[in-house]
Amino acid sequence: MSIVIIGTGMAGYNLAREIRKSDTEVALVLVTADGGNAYPKPALSNALIQGKQPQQIISADAATMAERLNAVIHTRTRVQSIDTANRQVITDQGNISYDRLVLATGARPIRLPFKGDAADEVLSVNDLEEYSLFREKIEQARRVAIIGPGLIGCEFANDLIVSGRQVEVIGPDPYPISTLLPEAAGKALQDGLAAAGVRWHLGTVVEEINHNNEGYQLRLTDGNIVMADVILSAIGLKPDLDLAQSIALETNRGIVTDRTLQTSQPGIYALGDCVEVAGLNLPFVMPLMNAARALAKTLTGTATPLSYPAMPVGIKTPAHPIVVSPPARGTEGDWEIEQAESGVRALFRSSQGQLLGFTLTGNYVDEKAQWTKQVPPVLA
Image: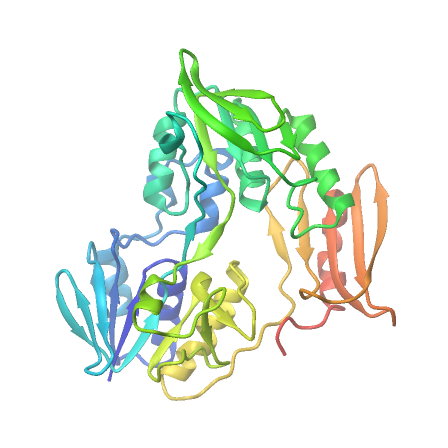
């Protein structure tokens, strides 16, 4: 039997490691359009604080990973199509046969169509190669504009402000990370980053981006002007569904799978930021790790339905640390907020008093273990 994994990001490589724990001999092939370097993607948003250059984030190159995993890794290889009838992956370097196929294609940055003669010079960072370009651009930059006050935008804002640069964050949200945090926690983060020097432009969006003698000029819909040497778009990611849709797999927000992570096509599975299981698309590390363990068992002979425990997310903003375990989407209940100068404790309870989620900021993050024990699993 042969298992082929498309993608060598954290999903692809973690799955390969888990497979080798169960089966040291099964033929294992990984295919990637990039160089196949192994690195922790979350490190991209705080490498400056850690004093790391892009190459220092890499934990192993493709050749080393191939040796460690007893696998064949095809780098700089683009998948053109999948022949499901004959179970072959068609690439620009030749065809690869599979018995079991895993799509670990990840997610892509959402790009907005800005007006202006510099609209196409907005950077995004979703992989090491994009981060390397970003680091090159900011070496001589004094002012950075970040479009998007979400989780990644805030992490980059913290990283960049500590590096001594002027940082301006722009977005339509009423407060940072508004899709994940209750208002009190978001406002506390906003204040913490503002105290560190971050300038906020909320309740507005970028209308036009143009060159000028001092770099870039961003005109906002509220009439304000922001000047920058580098512009970073951090408005979010969307699952990469192109390959899945080309072979008519069922998709929604992500590639739809059952609890064993099998797609609507028998023998084809999905994992990581591209997957949607039980209505959940969770682009975080802990869901990925849990899914990789379960899928590896399934692929090596023991069908294992995926379950998710409570999985709090730590947001890397040292100016005001945050841990959040959000309630399930659409859950009815209310936030109980306790706020102090040192931070915010927000507990989301049902009308019966059951704890369904929490957000801790500042010094309250030390209570993470206590509250994690009390919230229900994400997917039982």
